[in-house]
Image 1 (tube, rainbow, N blue to C red):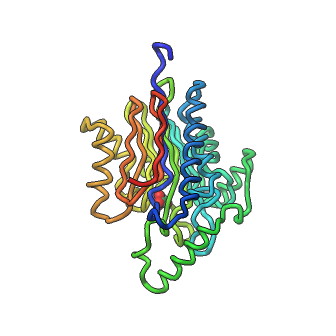
Image 2 (image 1 turned 90 degrees about the horizontal axis):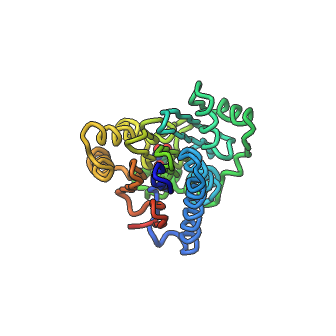
Image 3 (image 1 turned 135 degrees about the vertical axis):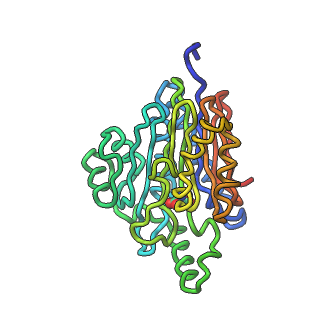
Length: 313
Ligand code: ASP
């Protein structure tokens, strides 16, 4: 590292919809943790070579979208009609440029489409078939719906439908309901970035859009302050403008990353009684990953190169 280079760091979450330890075979927990490590490594290697934080978070999220263990891309949640509608966003803290797709049905890696929209500038956000067509027009891979479906998501949809019929949907476990993936990074030039990608929640109504693609709600980055990617019932993150609010608390109240993120999860979102979590990074490469559920898939690599990966507390 030269004198002018900043420390690099990267963090990710794989959703706070983690089920009880006993609900998944140990082999699946191990495989999910291995994919988290691969995702971190993908972003970290780019950062080491001098790539931007935006490149790093995109690469990291692509690995998680391709993994069947997380609710994004391959393995995304199914909506009420048994259809995958995918949301994703990316934001560059250096320029405040951002891109997002909502309710896309065919984009293999929605975060790549968000990135392509960010490059374009206007529009920065596309929904539904238009998002799929845009992705095709810039040469991104499209897939049939079956590509995104896994046995676990089919089972989760069956369970949620039964719960809805029995009037017990609110008693569903966090794992049955939702999940998301997201990454935040700090690059050698001191720039911050965030990206988030999700299938939303199981049994969501057609056309429902969550917080992940809404800049300031589930995804936000601002150089010199923080980058944030959220997970949890998106409606409440949108209403709180959660990710931006964390940055605002840091800027206007002088709070540090740890206090601002914990206040969001433990105080601001607490009255809603939802499962909530996030991954965030500040300008020094410090990481915060608060959550109020039994677990949250998460991991990070700190400026000294140490890697941390965890699922539960
Ligand atoms: N935030 C996502 C959404 O509401 C779901 C989740 O993270 O669990 O779409």
